[in-house]
Structures are given as structure tokens and as C-alpha cells.
Length: 164
Image 1 (cartoon, rainbow, N blue to C red):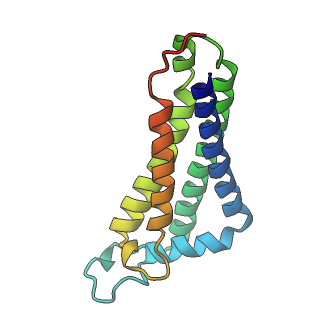
Image 2: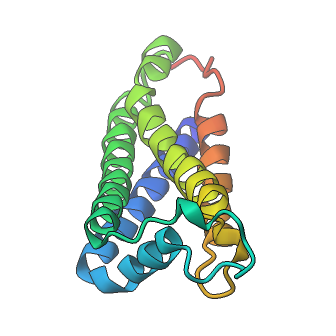
């Protein structure tokens, strides 16, 4: 029962973190909007880069990208929280029931992993060359989220063979 409780708690904590991040981005919209704007505009990367043709300078597209990020953060949080609640309800059930109840939590964690790995590391970091920016490089923060979410995703999806 301790392992199951740990799985539920860790999924819940990831969910609360992602939900807080999404809500903070709504409440303090301008702070991270500037981040999205600079990354997509590629205006702080190395001046000799030949990849600046990838830059997107449209404020409309910046707002749309930021809205997509916020939506993914909120969905990650909600799916993880609902998934943790669902797991909590079946924590004393047989292994088959507990394993079957992992789907929403797994979806939430996978969405979060996708956002921070593909969205920030791949699209932001490599496509928009965010790694070249001294001021607008979010790769270290994204990596922290990726590692935390990835570890919880692996731990959660270890087969649970406990008998209730």
C-alpha cells in the first residue's frame, strides 16, 4: 500500500505544479508572454546564425503559441489531479483494478512530458535556437520538468502486483 500511496502522491504533486504554472501564466500573462515572443522572434540568438529565417514575429502567433502552452499546462495539471484521485479511490483494490486506473494519470504525465520536451527543448531549444540566448533560454527549467515528470511516469507505470 505504501508504493501505491507514493504513486498517487507523486502524480498529484506533478498535477498541482502544472496547474499552478498554468494559472500563474494566466494571472501574470505578460511575464512569460515576453519569453514566448523573444524565443519565437529569435531576436536574442547569435547574430551570425543562418537559421533566423525560422523566426515568427507575428504577435497573433505569439499569443496563439502561448495559449497552447497554457492550455497544455492546465490540461496536464487537471489530468494528473483527476488521475491521482482515481488512483486513490482504487488504492486498496486488486492489482488489475489499480493498474487499469493509471490511464488518466499516464495521459496527464505524457502531455506534460510532451510539452516540456517537445515544446520547449525541441521546438523552442532547437527550432528557434533558444539555447543561443543568454536572456531567454528556458532549457534548464524545461529539463527539470522533463526529469521529474519522466521519473514519475516510469514509477507510476511499473506493474503493480500488490494484492489488496
